[in-house]
Image (cartoon, rainbow, N blue to C red; front, side, top):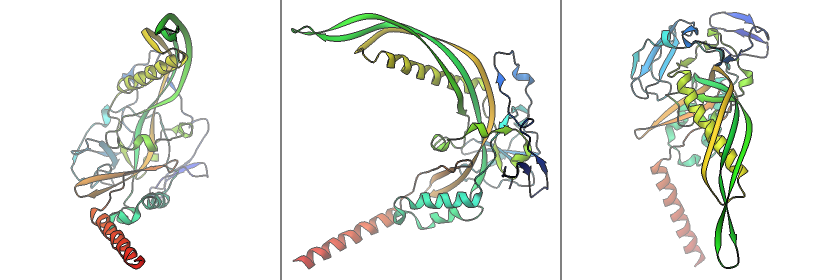
Length: 331
């Protein structure tokens, strides 16, 4: 598999491809949304010979090199894959964060995660998911936004006072101005791994390098299933929500607020597409799919632990028997 190692070169042991990494040519430029960029002018496709598939279960659209056919969906573990032709519609990523956590390390991380809580209550066969070739390396599509905001606000703030006879609310007009810079506001548009992705997504986007299809190597890639407009609508709501909190923080001495009006001007808008590395493994227990995610850059892990009802009952019975025996001995 292809990793960006300490030798500062991009190389693949499988196909023999190799080239040195260059700090100048591999740097990632931001695209300014205010420079009249036409989305239609962006490069389309992943610039690689990929087979594309759509999962009939989780609806993820994924792609892999033709010499490495997909037998099942890496997200839900099911085999309901149908051929898809979306690549010509997909915007080519600007950048990519290579895998720095190899599979053997990811296996150890997952083993420790499963052992961290109630290991005796887990189904016996769950340990099979940490065997070789069970984990799937997948690149997940993200949009990054940098936004500078100028916000003005005004409204009425009420302060409750006690004049000795009764409590009453005294209202006064408030207004203010604040500036804030939102850097690398990351928005994933992943269909396959929405559950725990936010928990493990502690990516250092400064390590992103210029996109090169050879980084895909033998890894699967989830294709972008949304546009910059879709992603920025989410980011815009997040920004407005945070600015609303910032304004209320400045009114923390008031007991109530009304007639609040917040106006925000968003400037210096820039965007980047970036693919981020993720190890995924799924486990099906009693018809329910459990998904485990491991950050391919930092090693952070997340996932639910299925508990075996039979083992739980066995442990409860064993505890009851032990307590009964102790009671009889102490008589």
